[in-house]
Length: 595
Image 1 (cartoon, rainbow, N blue to C red):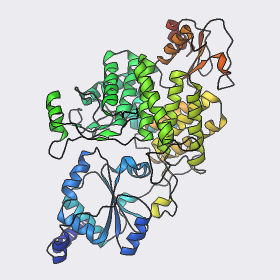
Image 2 (image 1 turned 90 degrees about the vertical axis):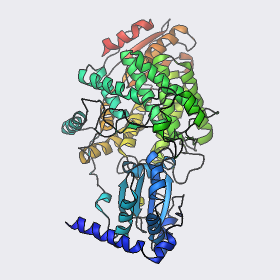
Image 3 (image 1 turned 60 degrees about the horizontal axis):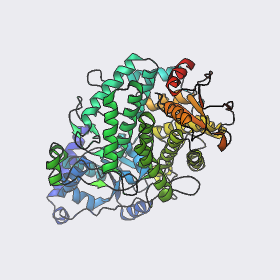
Image 4 (image 1 turned 60 degrees about the vertical axis):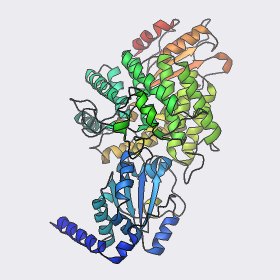
């Protein structure tokens, strides 16, 4: 009964304020948005006895636009903000630290904080005007933090591997959330979650027929979200049957889906999966690539407030062109470029797409020239407020490692190592995993504690582990295990959440990858054919080295192969290596025999 009484009281207060002269005087004034996030905001809020309202939005986000047009244009909302709030609007894509902290709450996300930096309320998604008015007035009446701001403290894990019971619990959630009717995990928004699909493809490769059926059902359903005219995948469907797309096209989704369709083609050789990958590649290079070769962030869902994606994307080519092209966010972030590079490398690996590899290499060189920090890390944008951010450096590190596997170029492995060394120096928490960004100087309230993200620690664990396999550097093995300890603790605390990323990291860190080494000169056509065959092997957890004796020993000094008169390949698993394979057509059979 108490919440209902409180709501009535809030509504009555709002009615009284609406009729007051002060309200009428201020209601028409536009919101004085701040657009920079810094600690001075809280100093000003304390001085003026205000709350800080953080509006986290995205350029591409349809409901963010609706929030601007309806909620923040509402006179009652404007008046309350003017009365007691310091409103700040931030592009979440531009600030990885805020997006890591509040990614579960948007977009749009609405966060209200006290002047001391403590959180009062966190709200997810679009808030209608009346709901926003009620919330703003309720905070003025009683600024006590609500249930949405409860913070969960993780116990420190003593082990870097999941216990059997933890793994069973995570698998139970993974299985329970699968939608057997429509495909995909969950029953709200439908899209391909990359770690979940990767985990499922790995299980399918090992002969799990249920996993194969789930992967193919989901991949096939997701084809409905690919634009049939221009390519590119829409962000998600808000209907269970994948038939109601939200039309924004994010580079993150293009890259993930491109990589996963390429991996699926390598596994099943289904032409439709290769065609999907090519459609995503074509969209990326035509619409999201800058003249210099770097990739932009996203394309808006809507052409304008008057022409939404539902109307626009239903038109044919001529109809679209007559109206124009939805806006593209032309920021070039290191993180997104790293994701694109990995995807393009995978397409090259499975299909020999030279243009994809050239695009990946060109983007990598642009980021190195324009976003690199001393010591091997990367800025997010041309100039960051805050940072550096873990996401940018781990993404680019993985990109360099992908380029090394695709090309055998030692400089790419060196660049990956530099990125990992930067992560160790700047983002390792002595107590618990890796954090998303260092806490800013003078931070208040919740911002004194850096964010530790499950998905980012999973990526660090996988990246560090693979670098360890390539180099035998114990520091990287230790880093992978440290990230895993955080993931083990998170698995215990979030046992009812879908966390295929934890399962995936656990399976990789705990076992050696399939490892194929080519022995032969890089100008030797036979060695080149063997290397191409190695890249085509259908495995997500795959290490490929190319030993050209003119370049010195392999980066991992523990691995040695005989000097042969002709080019050969060797396939190794956890405990077994094949005899030399001289013909590219025989390589996949040799790997399977070694398993």
